[in-house]
Length: 98
Image 1 (cartoon, rainbow, N blue to C red):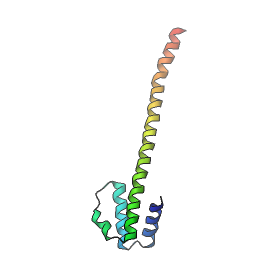
Image 2: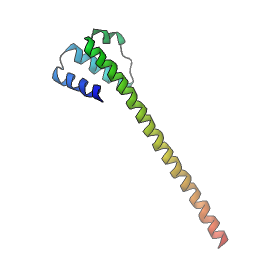
Image 3: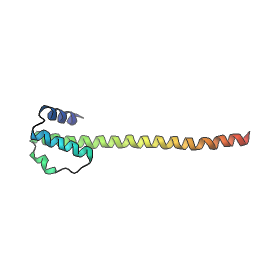
Image 4: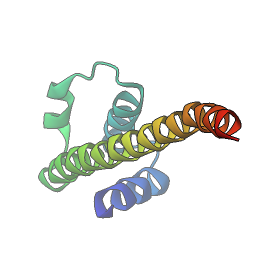
């Protein structure tokens, strides 16, 4: 999350700069899954270009973790649904046996 913090600080410290605007637009495009003109990245200084690449890497990694969390949540929900569906069957079996 180092690049995310660096980008935030850059944008906070110089919001009127073209570099802050380029990085800000990149973040908005990533979050909204919108198209982004990649050639804008070439307008950045070398250090901020590297920052943008690191930002992309961290964003991708974060999306992977979010997908993993969603998968886990869905799996837990499915397990709960299966338990709930099995509960009436077990109660019915007990009633017939008794």
